[in-house]
Amino acid sequence: MLSISVEQRRARLVRRHRLAPECAASSVVDAADSVVVLHATDPATVYLSALARCPDASLADISTAMYDERTLVKMIGMRRTMFVAPTPLAPVVHAAAGLEIAARLRRQLVKQLQTLPTEPEIGDDVESWLADVETSTERALAGMGEAFANELAEAEPRLRTAILPTTEKKWDVKQNITSRVLTLMGADGRLVRGRPGGTWLSRMHRWMSTRELWPDGMPETPELEARVALARAWLRAFGPGTVADLKWWTGWTLGSTRKVLTEIDTVEVDLDGDVGVVLADDVEPEEAVEPSAALLPALDPTPMGWQQRDFYLGPHREPLFDRNGNIGPTVWWDGRIVGGWGMKNGEIVWRMLEDVGAEAETAVAKVAAGLQDRLEAATVVPSFRTPLETSLTT
Image (cartoon, rainbow, N blue to C red):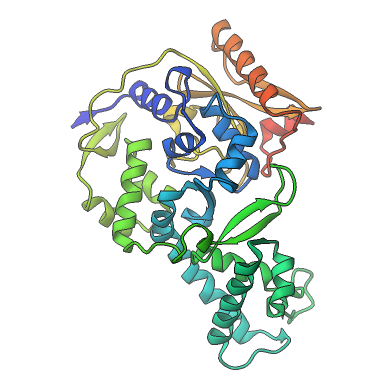
């Protein structure tokens, strides 16, 4: 069995994920494509991930790509997570992951509307009622271009239908279905996230019909074909990896993951004692790059690309992850994590978790200073606080 060393995996990571000056991304779209999709649960991650990979990009360039040129699309995808995908890949992500999520969300919502009291009351045919609300909402949005959830609820009052509490428990409260219906429509490929309600850090967003991107609606792709395309893209960017890595990243079942891999020409490789897979045409060694530093944001797609992370994370898991498995901001040197960073009083601060030498320290300081200037006086606070980031900033 062919062996791929830890050093070779790190070299692949740096080069393919654009984490060194000599292999930097040429555009914001190139930066996203290099890691398949950008994580977007935290709005800041999209911008910081792109800045880290594309030295010529500005905050405005990233916004332009998403909201003016629309070469990037913000959408729900794998593991019911928000991502920003290159527009040509969006139908693949939708068919490979989004539709299954949409079906699950629909079943859950329909069941609650059928079994719990609502205000106003809904008739017996909940599924038809919900389908009519969705069609009406999409029709209203077509005339508005982009709209916030409350604006859509004004145009389609049935979005304000509330599920009523049935107990006196504190968590059991009256809840409007507005966000749940819009999230469902997003997972179903009828809506995508639009412009934020404030700065690039805002967590409020408008909604936009997918027909603004595709006049006939989200292009349809057969599920297996889409899953094969998505798995191949992941292997090209993150391979070699284990079957468990791909299963975790996609959110598929183990059986589905193995079925998809039978459709792809791969070979098994030894990964320091673990069995991994790599594309059959991608077994040649990657040329190493000069050691370089990078500051990646919380939930960046590189550290979130594998379930088995020892080859780049080492012993640093505890201070860098929260209890739910979300990684915080990380400092990288030569293809591995060596520290963490955050922002305090508007300034980037960092801490090394091991001694990596004066060259690395100097490189990290230079990268931090460059990022500081590109943030245009903004302060970034991750949605998910980790022990190291919290200790650096409080």
